[in-house]
Image (spheres, rainbow, N blue to C red):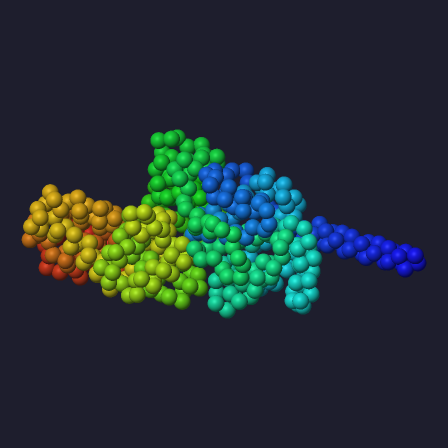
Length: 476
């Protein structure tokens, strides 16, 4: 009898200690974690993405723990989608206040240290830190968002720590994970929930219009003109709409013609959320892109082709290691694939790359050769009428700076054209564009190239134009 009483008393003491331990863990979440890892406020505007949101919410709110990645290119709305999912009623019902958001932007700290510090836990002793994190997050259903995860994962020397951290979190049965990162590649370390969500696509036209009009009132007849160069990229739309609150549409369109993406900033424009250029640059300067320069070269060429190129024609551009370069661009979600088999770069990325990463002359020569040979096909033995439908899609893919030249080459007799003259005119048009954008050195270089290619070709008006650009840029 006495032994039974002793056992009952001991059991009660154990249960009391466990209850105190759980209460202490919850108090840590209620105090130490606030406000660093707390869930950010709900979004005021969020349009489109219904299918993507439902897929994420279903995985998170169902039985067991969900482990989801949100992938995509720069400015496509990965963080926004994650925040929207965090505030979905089904997610709130399951996790309540145990929904946490950790920004992985730190360049100094590794993944585990960044996460631990977000919960107010020192990571000097990793085993102790893991013990405390497991107490905080592993006993009841919890949801942690790891945002901008590529910052602590993409570099080769940081990847083991990042994937070990995911493996640690994955070992907690009650913990669900939502990880956002640039690119199209999921990290190892976790058994991700199926089906795997594809990288985010741009917004459709309706969602793009709703997003813009939720911020600024613009007449319908000019809204389409403002949205066209933004190509459905959410960050670009939000930043342009923010400017439209106090600038007229015509002013914005004029500024876009020479400033391009550099005008799309909010406030100081010092972060990836407030500057489209910074967001795009982060992807282009990612460790995988830097480690393989041929990827940047391919990107600079694809940026000149607004409608892209058929994947089977890529080899015709004679670019170095183009297949592997395309793979790297795909890993970083800097290119998109159409069902037609075309590879293209979204318009805002095109605009940024053509200004900041123009291809050099040696790179462009085989590109010019390919596209300038297409008009000749229309004069082939098949006949002009039969060849135009076959060649027209390719003639339409090039940028405005030499699309008119190709059209002329189709219309004019081939005897009046040679490669040097066409290259000269292409360089002249690029020189004029660079001068209009204030890129004096680039304009000077391209105008000098134009004169060199003109040679003895009799184009007095265009030669005078090239000389004028050289004179004006030299005097500045």
